Length: 161
Image (cartoon, rainbow, N blue to C red; front, top):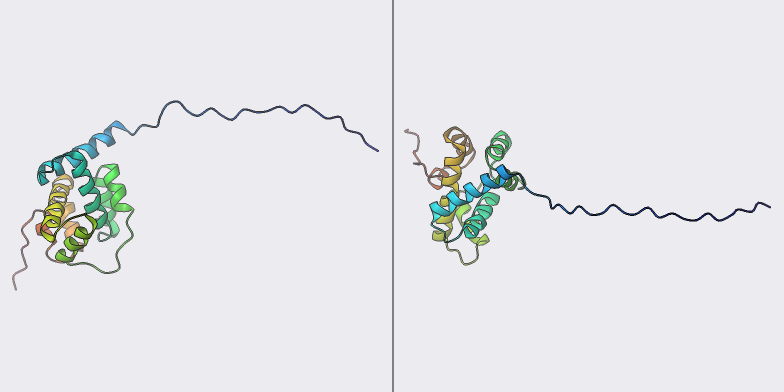
């Protein structure tokens, strides 16, 4: 018969939680703050918090309708937070007209009417257009049905027949 002698147990302490909170990159914070401040000014929102809320709603709605290389380019051209919002959306199965898009945004904003939702969408998308530039805006618009150009602050010129 074998007899074993009990050994004292040693306890290995768990690693102490970090006392330093994770911080965002200062440049990223600045980019997001600049974008939402530009939306606040364009939409004449009383606070940056309101502008940020509207920006998130509109970007999340747009994210489902921009696909492929344009979606990647748009996400990369925006501040990281805005790019994440665009890229995290599941692609839509069928495109919406500009009016349907505005109406879909109106359902996401408490108390919104089609008119106020159009104001919100235009405030965000025209700011977005300014931020990402004309060439990328043109590429994004080429993926969307006619009528979106006005929401991006552009003339909606139909091709002459």
